[in-house]
Amino acid sequence: MPCQTYEALEQSLKSARSEFAYFTFDENKALRGMSDRQSKQFAKKAQERISELSKHISWHRQTCAECKGPGL
Ligand SMILES: [Zn+2]
Image 1: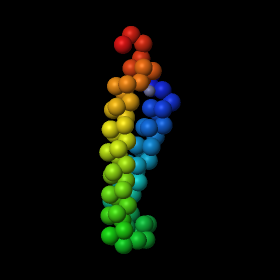
Image 2 (image 1 turned 90 degrees about the vertical axis):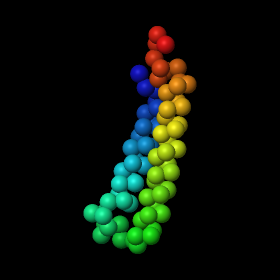
Image 3 (image 1 turned 45 degrees about the vertical axis):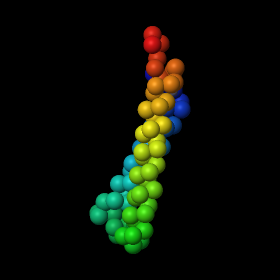
Image 4 (image 1 turned 90 degrees about the horizontal axis):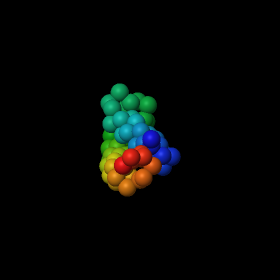
């Protein structure tokens, strides 16, 4: 059973992923209303957050007693 910290991390990862998609997909170009260069910068930031969060999540999974669940 994942704990609240884990849920929050997952939530942040999800939003970072959709942010990344938002700044990456050509379909959103008109929506974004910014230059390609700016979009790329934002996409890069989002990607960095994704990899940070992924690391954090896998580390959490290994160390959190609650997420490991009983019996482990
Ligand atoms: Zn946990």
